[in-house]
Image (cartoon, rainbow, N blue to C red; front, side, top):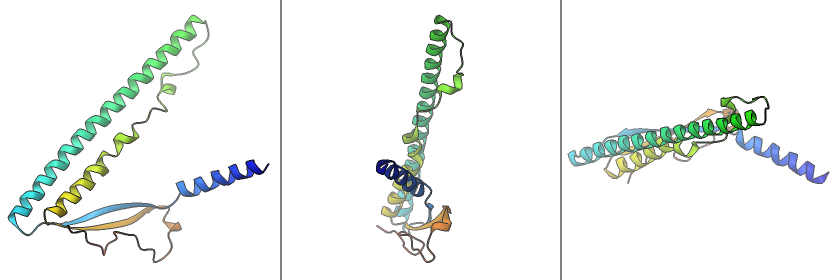
Length: 155
């Protein structure tokens, strides 16, 4: 009985954490003052674009592999059911879940983070602006977020 209570408490805590405030950070960029700095910042943008292209291609490849694997598993199931003379109760779609490309979805955030660092290194001024986008009622009034609107990032 004691273990069941602990399990329910753990699930409740996990639900609270999962439903906590969600923040999004955007960046106000002030270009470098020198011509060299602006050229450097342009190269940062080109590197970011290349990073996003590679990330998108990896994500698409992962999705394609995921769908091919699910199709393979469905066909195995279908053949097995036919050999056993059992009805086919599952659909092709039921095999698509559980194979995540989650890691591949983070490429945009990673490319943006690298770009911001590169831009600042080139002499640009980066001012992060972090705002709550979901479950904001849980945020205490006056709560200051690190890297908020008054914290410029300079390197």
